[in-house]
Image 1 (cartoon, rainbow, N blue to C red):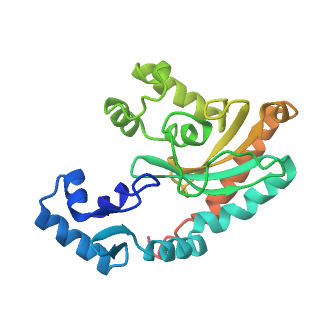
Image 2 (image 1 turned 180 degrees about the vertical axis):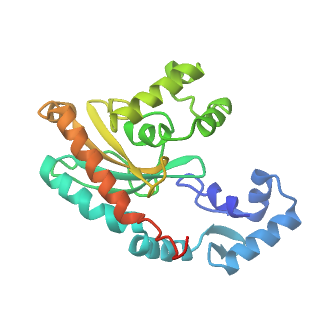
Length: 247
């Protein structure tokens, strides 16, 4: 039912129940029931039988900005890096096999990246996504590979051993750099944000620069600083759960 919400976009801002049923493959009876429940929950708005996203989504986003531990821990640290480096800052997270940008911190150059909150990122293009994907367990990564969900980079994703070695290289280095993979003349450097004591990261932080600006930095020093900040964010956002007495 909730997948109905994914139908709406800048090119499909509103639609009838009949259109929703056709796109989702629902019977009309099922679709009418679903849109009624979503409307009652405030997730859809019904204007004379034409549906659009509901105002409760805005309210939920507001609550998430105020209560998301990753944002609460990450934004202050990201602001420091943006001020000290002059780059643009991003925090991204994985949801339902998608990498979604959840915060964009503008730098002094005001780069027009188009990575606003909620923007879905390619799974295997750009450092923001790659540092998350690289920390996956071998079995989970292999499942994505087998389902061709990482096919944005054929040089890496047509051969499983090549992909696995590439991801191992990323995790061993602790950060990754992408040159013009998403925007011409831009360089992104990212580090995974650890989810507590788990070896798999579900989030990342990224700095983006113009190519000539990035050339001013010592890459290994910048990467180490970014990785250290990402670890700090992870420890703050996902503190270890105390072991109960007697265990």
